[in-house]
Image (cartoon, rainbow, N blue to C red; front, side, top):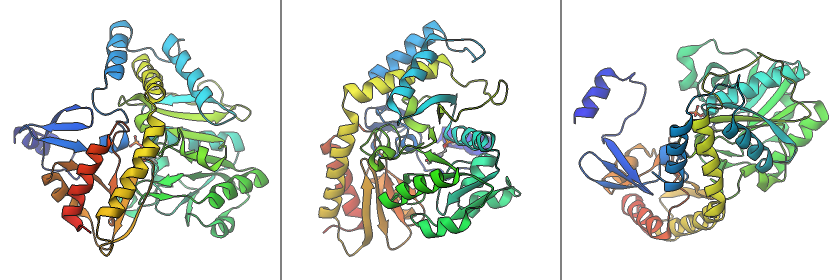
Length: 387
Ligand SMILES: *Cc1c(COP(=O)(O)O)cnc(C)c1O
């Protein structure tokens, strides 16, 4: 395996790698250097909402590449202007002021900085098993010790408390709490949805105490959970919304959307060289159009329900602890470590993820069809036990 050898020799070495070389993709399929075809339920960690090489996204990228690729935010730009307006239109009420960046971690990083600026306070509360990225600020909000330990000390002022537990949350709030950052469904943390009571409770606490509610929808946004944004399900509007992953159909982009009446940044206080580049903006515009034209949010909800019900029907209920999810963000919590299952699924030409040690996670493209889901469920059943 020539590419494997090169990557092993010259890559950073920080990734757990699977033993295949992926060289192309089309729709829900990926292809390796040996010509094998896989059903892709990794979708670039949930990025490829539209599958691979979706014609509308490809065309938007090609057209923009021919027109203008780079244009920093010191200049105005047609595609960026259009996208900023679009984001204000589709995100929850009151959120209109967007900072564009290039990844989820950057979107979170900006949200943390903006929270300190807006409130004049320093401390941030996040939750056990939460994941918000790996830059120093975002990493400080992330839960897992193994991601953080070699890099201490992190940013001061962060503390973690139990997810879905309002009482415990109340206990850690202080006069210096600037913001609470929460995922509506914990992704890396095991595909765990927040309860209705929890999200509404956070909103109330924030309103009472002048604390900002940051909702991290980097993984759950843009239809993944069967709603355009997972927060829509809770009928709650955050003060700051973090977006990333599928926002630009696979082109790197992050976005931090702030409530208009709170936004108070001064010139020069934050920035990014690539942020708001026309290539990513046009890809994002095409992505948002395609979501609507192809009814992908509805399909995510329907096919997600189908996926979960087929898993429950076809898998031996004595082998797992729980099958859960929202839309096409789905997890099977097992009673033992799931690492080995991923390699076995790969042998059956299905690519999936883990979420923590005990959960097999599926984040397929939203364009996935029932026939693909049937094949994924069958392969899963063969490995972990059919009913
Ligand atoms: C993936 C993810 C991030 C980090 O995004 P990167 O693009 O990897 O920096 C942040 N928050 C959540 C909820 C994520 O799933």
